Structures are given as C-alpha cells and as structure tokens.
Length: 356
Image (cartoon, rainbow, N blue to C red; front, side):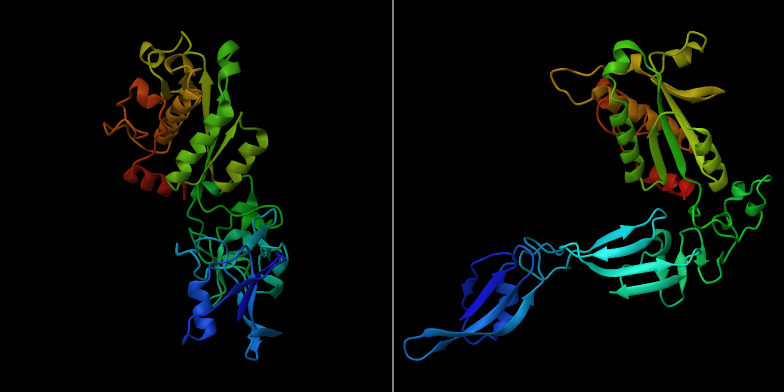
C-alpha cells in the first residue's frame, strides 16, 4: 500500500495506485495537493493475510500547494511559494519559504555589486529591485543599463532636468544616484508625485474620505502602468528637494468646497480645472454627496475621477468624447461621476512615456 502524509497532520492518508502504473507516475497527477508539503511512502503487504509490514523509504516528496497551481489545474505540480524581503533601497536581501525559513540571502557593496550570497540563485530582481542580467552582469533600469562593477550607467541620463546647477554631483550624466547609493536610488525617469490637498471645511470635510480618494487615484494610474505616487497632504520641503534631484514632477490637487469667487465664471461652473495660472482644483460642490442608503464613498470616487483627469492634463493628455467611463472624457453624467474610471489604452501609453 502507499501512504500520504500531509506536513503537520497526525493521521496519514492511505491511497492505492492503479494497477500497471508506476507508483510515482500515478501519484502526481491523481492525488490532490496537500495543505503544504507532504510525502508518500510504501508499507509492504506481508503474507497471505495481507497484513501491513514495516514502513519503507519515501517515494516522492509533495511540493504542491493546496488548490489550483499556477496553470490553474488543481493537483498539478506548482511553483513552491517563496517570499522576497527587501531593504530600504528595494534591494532583494533574503528569500524565505512557506515556513519562514531562509532559502537564500544576499549582501551588496554600496554601488550594487554582490558581496555575498547563500542558498538558491534567487529572483532576477536584485539591486534596488531591478532585473540583473547574470550573463552581462548589468542591471536593467528601464531607461538605461547600469554596471554595478563600474558604479556607472552605460549611457547618459535621458532626463535633462535632473541636472541641477547647484548640485555638482548631478553634472556627470553617467553617475549613479548622485554618488550616494546608500541613501538614494536612481529614478527610472520622471515619476509623477501627486498630492491630494484636502482644503474642504465643515460638514464636507468631516464626510469626505480623502484617503479613499488618494487610493483610488493611485489605482487609476497603476492600472495605466504609469510611474506615479499619490499621497494625502501638501508636498514638504524634502519632497520638493527629492523631486528636483530625481527629475520627478509634482502635481498638487486642491480639493475645495467651491471655486473662489475671484475665479472666472467658466472655472466656477466646472467640476475641476487646471492650468491658466490657477491652482489645480476639484470643487466638491459640483460632485454628488455620499448616499447614506448606499455607503460607497460616492464623493471620494467623483473627486478621484476629477483629480486623475486634471493630472492627466498636466502630463499631456487631452479631453475626449469617449465613453463616460474614460478618465479624460468630457461626457460626464451624475451617474458616471460616482463610477471609478480608467485611462484608455492610448492615454495609458502616453502616461507610461511621460513618467518612465
């Protein structure tokens, strides 16, 4: 007979292979995956009575997870779970298994060359989370290749705005992270830093979920594949310095009760606006209030749609007359305001290029 024991269980499970099929060949496709890892082993049948003999050697270890595998077929062999642990720079420092045990560790010299490695080869994403070509020994940082052994990029920085007159370390267009790799990482390009500045008052402020709005804006840009980071509040001095050093762009969206009386009538009648020498704003008096009967953060959805629309303009996108579910559409209805929107494929591609 053949027995299967799930790791962590007391009673093993007795199974019988089909006649004429080698045991190992029968086990994998026909026995469902266990809860975690397990093993199979023989116990021979002794004598005419068929009594079970001593426990034999393990036949095969089960490294399949419960349920469907990566390919979607329950019980089929699947990739063993691995968990990647990163440091403050995003570099892969350790990989653990399902039990939390280390299966690989890595240490790096300041500019990214591997100083020490143990265990499994690990993921291709190494220094600062970028993919390392093991053959060429180069890191692919999207806009260009980086040589950790050289402490330099192999081509010049395509973001000319990252060269600051008052920062001599930025003058060399091949250097990595302003020659300060312990604290800084080099940008992939011009990331968009978006701030949701809630300036509403009274009952609007108490009911408006600013965090929900920021999360929704982040999700919208993430789905478009754009390099954007969304936060609640105003950019501080360090945010501005960091953006200047990395060549990022800052976009502040003020959420207000209503447009100031000093602004043009066209602006006062709009849900939101940007440009024209005026701050980027979303006017909550032009958005639906939350419906107590269906608590779904209707106002924060409407604000997030409007905020994404205006930042889209800042990043070079134009209005369109597409479906009301397109972020950049001007075909806005009360119902579409409270439905999360996405950038269309063409606009998403433009955002990738603008923030790469």
